[in-house]
Length: 85
Image (cartoon, rainbow, N blue to C red):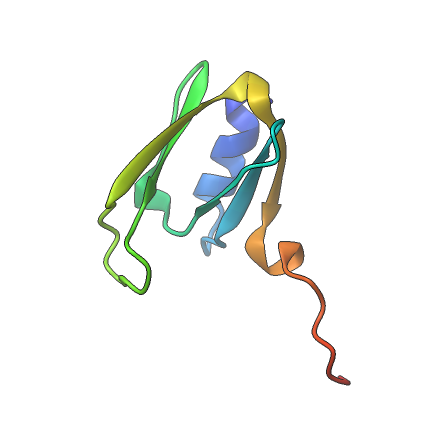
């Protein structure tokens, strides 16, 4: 994955949270643009505490761009609801 590909998701207006899937199957959600740093060879995502609304991270995860398989908006990554409509 190229840094520009990730940066495109970070800079979208309005920002839409997105999910990164790695080659080992792990996923990480980017919930705020201030919590994502894109480098030439890796990406760092700050993970806030569950339920925390402030863009302050509790844990920082760094991943190599070589291991990123997929980036998608979280809304499209969720399974469809069972309801009608």
